[in-house]
Amino acid sequence: MPDPRGDGYVDEIPYTHGYHAAMNPRLMQWTVARAGFQPPEVHSACELGFGRGVSLAIHGSVGTARWQGTDFNPEHSRSALALCEGCEPQPKIYADSFAEYFARPDLPDFDFIALHAVWSWISPENRARLVAFIRQRLRPGGALYLSYNALPGWQPMLALREQLVDRAEAARQGGLPISAAIRQAIVELERLAPEHDVVLHSLKRRSASYLAHEFFNRDWHPMTPEAVADELAAAGVRRICPAEKQPSATFRSEYWLRDAAALDSATQQSVLSRFKILDWSGVTPEPLVLQEGWSSSAADAPETVVSVCNARQINRQLLALAERCAEPSVLACPATGGGLELGWVTLLFCSARQRGFEGPDAWADHAQQRLEALGQRPIDQGVVLEGGMMVRRFLREAAMRFAEQTLPRLRELQALD
Ligand SMILES: C[S@@+](CC[C@H](N)C(=O)[O-])C[C@H]1O[C@@H](n2cnc3c(N)ncnc32)[C@H](O)[C@@H]1O
Image (tube, rainbow, N blue to C red):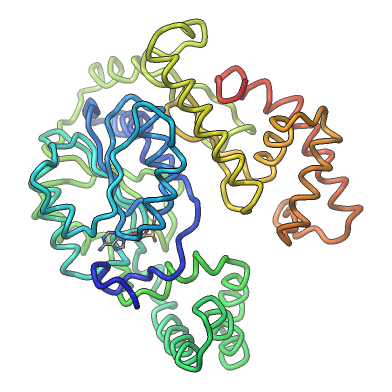
């Protein structure tokens, strides 16, 4: 029986282990300042609908802000808690529905409220609750991070999604579990609607967890940016800038401010000069915005020690998880207070090293063994690699690059010892 507290949101399959850097307060501050606005100091922050909680666990234990968050799926709150087990401080993790959480009498005011991939998948009533919560709880000058499925980009998918849901529902009534019902619906539609073959083929490559949460909730409401702004006007926030470098036609992520204060160019330069950036083009997809006061030479400063200990603790959990599930792709990084996007295969190399295997050949062997055990094939520049020899060559080269480039940098950032 679905949990009625979720208002029609899927809870039979847990979500994927994604990390979303845009919710790192430090990256938000830098992006907002670059857009010409005064970013808030972030002491207190909140993530709504945190999924498996990778972002919340990392930001709440490795960054400097006090975080809390809620997700009504108890499997999700258990995952989030497990990731930061043993960390001090830890985020406060609730398994409340939004309605329950917003009604709590003990909530503080927040400098930053963040929700990724939630807005388009909840009911209009829940969106109204959310807007009221932001109005009540976001401090003046505070920031909101919000992402959503956008129109007109999703327009061509609206009718196709209806058909997918109807067919999957019929298959479930016939006794299939949700993941098999979704797969069957996609295969049927490939036959019946060949004009959508490219989209349907790409869906076949996504995990059942992703597909169930993306398409099979009762609510699925892509919106134009204007419609989102109309609803959020009642929260007293204003759209400031995209949170990602290249906004896509189908998915937008944005920063909003309450009582936005524009910076003149001299003040903007002075605000930006307080950020320290590492540009590791080619190694990390985004420049790394360092935590305030971070320097590896200040390794003995109490805040640095706490960040390093907590990052190592979370990374042990992430590496253990990567051994049994092909999803996690980040490590917690004390230098940035956020997650470092490395990819699952790189996490397997880190795990092999942590298990005492020595050198790139042994790390590649370990990764290949885990790939085979989990039925995964590596993807090289968009091509799925078939055959043991090809996979082996790819993994050896990747392990060599890891040894030469990535590992020394992870150690410099104190993400690994
Ligand atoms: C598409 S998932 C995104 C998860 C996560 N933010 C991420 O991007 O990895 C949406 C999340 O919102 C949660 N959610 C949906 N409706 C909710 C409600 N009414 N109360 C609390 N959580 C809810 C779901 O359990 C799910 O984890």
